[in-house]
Image 1 (cartoon, rainbow, N blue to C red):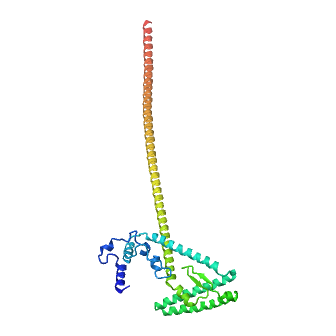
Image 2 (cartoon, rainbow, N blue to C red; image 1 turned 30 degrees about the vertical axis):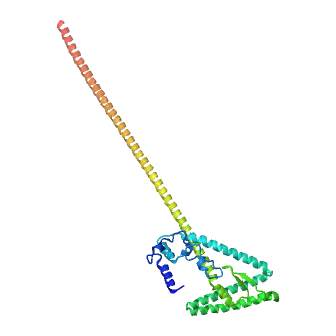
Image 3 (cartoon, rainbow, N blue to C red; image 1 turned 90 degrees about the vertical axis):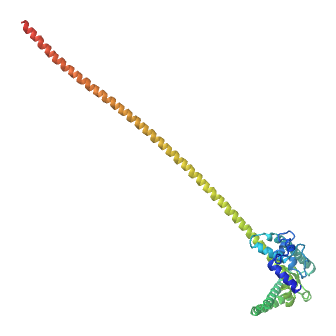
Length: 342
């Protein structure tokens, strides 16, 4: 790629499709179905494994750094859920890779000489130490390229320690195998990228593998897949938490409605009790008023009767006194008549 092309690509990546007002480029949006969503998320295997032994060729969908820039700008404002499409793509790719790994293991088991479980465990130990050495050497080279020489030296010191352990493990493995069989190259399939690794590979071969574009590319793809899955799980948990919060809000609203209904019923009962008390009060008032009137009426009648009796008594006494006076007067008149006759 020429310097001018590299500059255009860098500007596309930084500014997006609208950087120079080219309307023809803006006709395809990053949301278009023809655009590779894995490319927008920088995890398309066609990009990552380009130029390796497992180069997949050109992707069937559109790859454009400017569209990736558009997506990155838009994703800061809202969640576009493009990870879901990317996860489907990467899961399919990794599943194919894992099937190839299992098939390679099966072929090795069929072609390599049968060994006992004890010997196989010792060979596996050598493979594990080889893998550790390869990863450390790749890390040391990366640190050296970045100018971090001191850290690279510390890593190389760790490599020497692992080499010593590997030498002891190889000695144990050699002593457990016939001399003729030990010379045969025992292979192992890399669990990350499905490449073959030899039991007797030297440090350079191990460093080239574990620091190579193929192995690191598969690590990047697998890590991106796990990150996307983790975000999906977090979204699911957040949606579940939001649903739970909404359910709790519904329950709280229902509790408030019940409290409101209960309060309304209590108010109605209170008003009803108040009305009953007022009715009873009015009834008692009327009853007291009626009893009072009756009592007053009765008392009036009693007083009238009492006065009538008193009048009758006075009248009788007067009549009796009058009769006594009249009797005495009559007696006197009678005596006077008798005296005159004599």
